[in-house]
Length: 358
Image 1 (cartoon, helix red, strand yellow):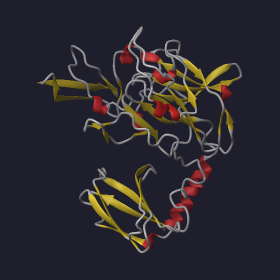
Image 2 (cartoon, one colour):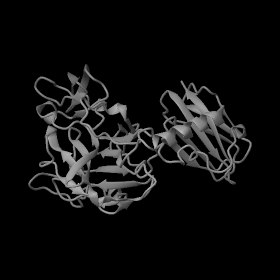
Image 3 (cartoon, helix red, strand yellow):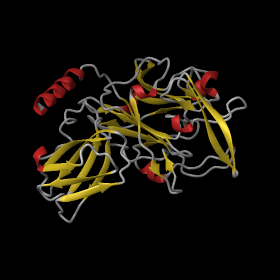
Image 4 (tube, helix red, strand yellow):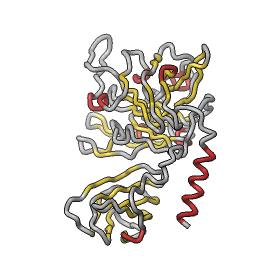
């Protein structure tokens, strides 16, 4: 059965290759301050010259990128590889407005630093971003994030959500005083705080203070302006992590940058399983997992355990040097769903088990 499914997946990937046409955005980082970056993926088997490509920002619902800036890319991008454009600000600024520098750790991950403001990587959650290609004498979109030209519908708002319409009343604490406020989402747009909208549903805002990963089944960009832009059609958001203040945060998560996985890559279906593969080498219990704890038992010594979501995103990774054959995992904060547990032995024999978290 597993061989049949693998064969079907490979056939699907082969047939789909004719459908993908060009580069596309594979990761979007809208972090704190100016910690912002855009990852671009090459779904083809050819190295692509980036001199004909640009990234443009359509600021606050604008019809053009005049106010948001445009950046021409430089260099090349290899087959099934990524290229990362990162905010290029290296010093804190106080005039004409306060503007913090981008984290140098994030900048070190980039292939190209963006130019000074206004530039695409000064995006906020309500800016549309386009990947443009010079075709003849015209710049033609090969991918879009967000919706261009919304004007006042997005200008004063904070970004896009996965929910069409909702209103949520919650308690907000400021200066030691707790008050009841209401936040709203209208046609997938998260409304900012205002006199008529006293709160903001910031935790439901996918394009502000979040990292987005393109779904691995996406093999080409969005070339027509979406109406509306529904972020969950093609994007996943990374789960929150514990911040230095002890609170959960969605900001400044860069662990997946430069590691995009896509079904266009012929190695996509085998990249989980390098070396000899055997599902019988390990057992996982309890399965289904009903608490935040389970045990992996292996017939061979364990050198590495990695957990993947069903869309192929790495969620947990740990190496072991003691050669133990039984490992208890806990406090992983896994959401309900199906996961793949990959166990590798010191001699690179790999086993994969499917688990269900309830």
